[in-house]
Length: 252
Image 1 (cartoon, rainbow, N blue to C red):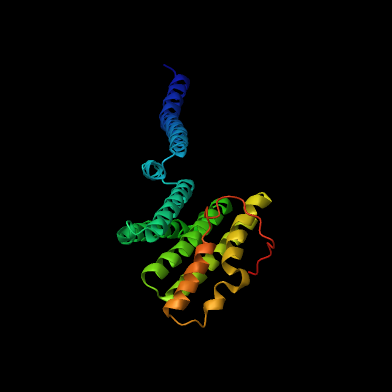
Image 2 (tube, helix red, strand yellow):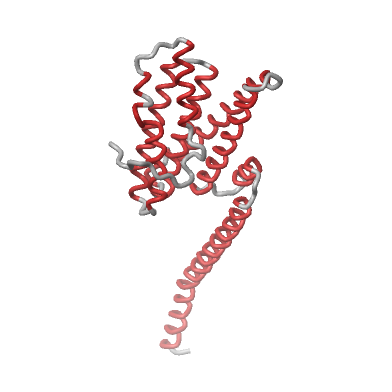
């Protein structure tokens, strides 16, 4: 074997040893990408299945089983929880007006408070990483948090009758709605969707709904007045359907 042949063989062996790890790495990256794509496809299919579930409680449980828990999934969960909260509130109101069911108001109120607390906790967890959220997601989370706080204020007035605390929660709701407005303006959405948090903000802030009770005392008559006012402010659908306020200009 000539020296030239030996050199050629050595180069071939060297190239083989060099390229083999690269080939293994490339194959590994391909399989990782393929597995990720398969997981994404599977997740989207399972998400569509959960979306199709009519029962809100069952849908929430289905969403919770999906991994990873993407922000889109968190939004779906709080939207379903909001619908459950509204239904519980209706039960609570009916029980309060029915002598036979009046004894159950405490249980309904406790369930509603627990549900709202979970909803707000999920919103807070999602917003903790708010800087990384797309505006299309961010505005919905803030809007959900604001709506949950409005309903929490109503429940709080029913159970604690603490006017100062109620007003504090209502102000927090206004802050959330403002943040939702700022986010939705960056999302490039149609006017119908952009007006959703504006509508909720105007419902709560219109004609001084919060400020008008600043000097109120905490006697029964004043509490009842605020309770009746709050009942008209709770978004029936949590701002998840188009609403067109008379004036959509909001001070920020």
